[in-house]
Length: 401
Image 1 (cartoon, rainbow, N blue to C red):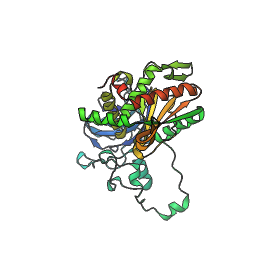
Image 2 (image 1 turned 180 degrees about the vertical axis):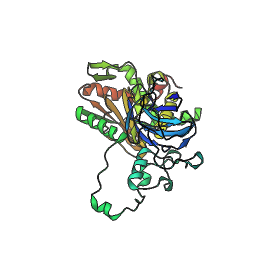
Image 3 (image 1 turned 90 degrees about the horizontal axis):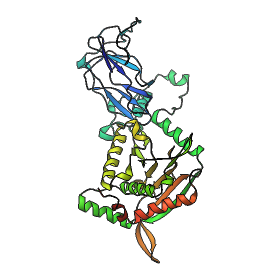
Image 4 (image 1 turned 30 degrees about the vertical axis):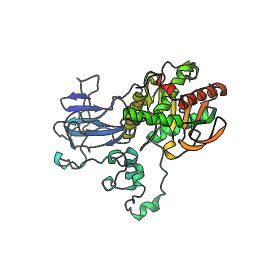
């Protein structure tokens, strides 16, 4: 954002190394309305994140780009003027701040709103806002069920659409909703992953009794209830260290060995499935991994993750145990070559030393790209993960906290 005599030029920010453009989801002020410095000016959506951007200064907002446009980073999208005029100056670029060519003035449409007339904003996800506009529903009348009371798309399921003139319905049928934003990205990536990769899946039931006991013991010693996902992530990272031939990726230049062990965890959010990635997991202890998982998941749920948090993964873990799912076949998250599906831990009949007994068990399913990984090495990888989970004491020798 750059400052000129006419005010601040607001540009689409670059929030990550891989970010080249973003969807301008919503303006929180109308053209000509006043905004205070630090208040949310607009919401943007990248491939995986929805972020609120604050105003850099107080003043009157002059909008240059409407909602719903995909805008390249560093492109001017608004100007914040200290005094309101009916003329919007040409925004100054980030690089140049000197010469301003003549342009046709833009006039404010409608009534200007004074600062004290601004209505409070409503917290809602982008999908919910789009759906509300399509239904003609006021978000101020909807109770949100998302994080911190945020309104999500599901909250509008029972909302009644606003009454419309009869001729509008008779004129043309309602068109289907197109896949946009994050939903479109998810659809594209999973379709590519399924179509381009000959995927195979291996499943195994393991004895998780010692894992359940270890988790309870750690809670007694530290007061922290460590997630099972932290144990699983540490076991996978340890296996990658021992079997580096699995930590590879297929690129245009051929098969490359990855230097880092970065593991993603699938997170259910109001906007859809997101996979934040933890970096260098093999260099961290159990409690540190658990803290990072909680923090990354919370940012993803609240839509505050940066684009770079979803890149350069070696592997993904997806866990549906909390939903009572015993086992499932996951789809590989491109460009990774494998993904681990985790089912619920439950008491089941299990044979131990030739005797049938009741144990805490769980089912792991490893889906892998058969072009890059044969069945035997994939089986060895899953076998080692199982050994570490069944004997979690082996993980503590790596580093506990």
